[in-house]
Structure formats: C-alpha cells, structure tokens
Image 1 (cartoon, rainbow, N blue to C red):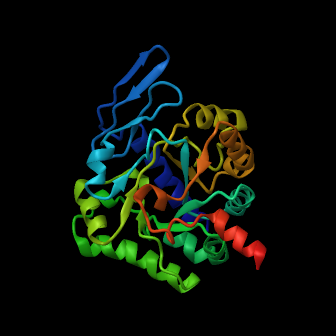
Image 2 (image 1 turned 45 degrees about the vertical axis):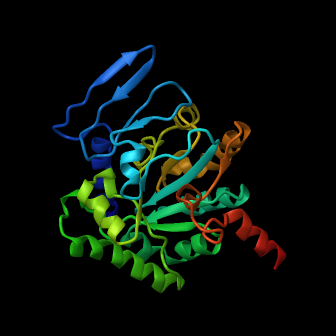
Length: 287
C-alpha cells in the first residue's frame, strides 16, 4: 500500500511540474495589477488567470479542444460549477466528500485509476448508487502523451472500464482525464475514436501532498477567489483538507449564486444522462 501511495505521490509531483509549465518549458510569469499569467509547455495542461471571478485561459482554447470532444470549461454566462475529483488511492477522505455532496444534492464525477478500483470497491459502488458519474483516469496513471498507438491507449482505459463494470454491473461513463494533465493532439483523437469525452479543468489548487495539506484559509483563498461561471473544478479525493471543507465550500459557492451540474450537462447529454445526484437521492427518499 505504501509503495502504491509513493507512486501516486510521485505522479502528483509531476502534476505540479505540469501545472506550472513542465521541465524545460518556457514559463513566463507577468505581474500586472496583482494578476499573474502562466504560459505552460505545449501539450501539458496549464492555466493563466486574470481578474478574480473570471474564466482563465488554457494553453488550448475551448474551441480547439471541442474538435476532439475535449473540454476545460463550460458556458461563461451561466453560474454553474462542475465538480470533479481525481482518485488515485483511498486514505479516508473520499467518503467525507461523498457525504458533503449528498448533503447538497450535488453531482460529482470521480476519475478513478486501477489501484482505487482494486482497493476501494465499496466506495466505488457508493459513488454509482448515489448517482455520481465515474470516469476513466487510466489503469496505471502513465504519461499518456508518450503513447502513440491506439491499442496501448485502449488497454489503459479498457482495463479501468472492465473492472468498474465487474464491481458495479454498470458501464463506466465515457469520460477521460489525462493523468498529470499530459496529453497530445493524437491522444485526444484516440480518446474520441474510443467514444470518450476528455475533461481538463479550469480551477484546481495544490491539494495532493498528503503530508503538506493546505490550511482551510489557504484553500478558500484559491477556491473562492478563482471560481467562475462554467468552472470545471478539479479536487483530489486524497486531500484531508478537501474532506474537511467541502460542505462549507459548497455552501459558500451556493451563497455566491452557483449551482452544481453533472458533466453530461456540459456536453449536451440525453435527459436520462443528465439526471443529477439530487434526482437520485429524491428517488431513494420516496422508496
């Protein structure tokens, strides 16, 4: 278990590098009237932030990404938030997150890897039973941008889909998130060919170091100031801070006028696919 956690932490360290530009990348940081712009390495997902409460820019535009059924943000005119969680391993925080989502009738999408499925099948079942979407984060969490052939790409996602179906009896949602945010145009094309929609993010913060968790104040400073209409929020389920603050965080976002929707709302899914966790919970209450 410790070995698996070390692997995941190493992968998360790489995400730090990716998030702020990547090794050998040209990273320009400009300070102007209190704002910063990050120019990340091409093909590694990164964001540039402007004024508080506005949509950030990605290193690929929403229009470019959509050509391959990929997204990082929703409609900037609607006060909607899409909650997503990356699940590398379980350390006691995911069920607290599920409790908060249930309390607020908020739908989430959990991007899982093979290790999480292997070690936490009961939690995975709970995700499905409570109406949340479970997406594909690949089985081994590799650098998928280094994979150039469709068969290898397919195996990484198919192994997750197969185990998820074995656990829940359901098909996994065809939602894909590249590990560490590393991707290539070829990857996006392959994901689309396999029927997947790819999801990056427009809001995240450094929450993945298990032994160096942000304080509540630090988390709120990032997550409240940078929230914006159409935000796809990335949080890690390994974060103790996220488990502790999510209920209050969702309340604060609601007080700011935001509502929570499933990713199917963003991609224009069918009425059945856009059924929210709120609907699912209401059904259970009436049963």
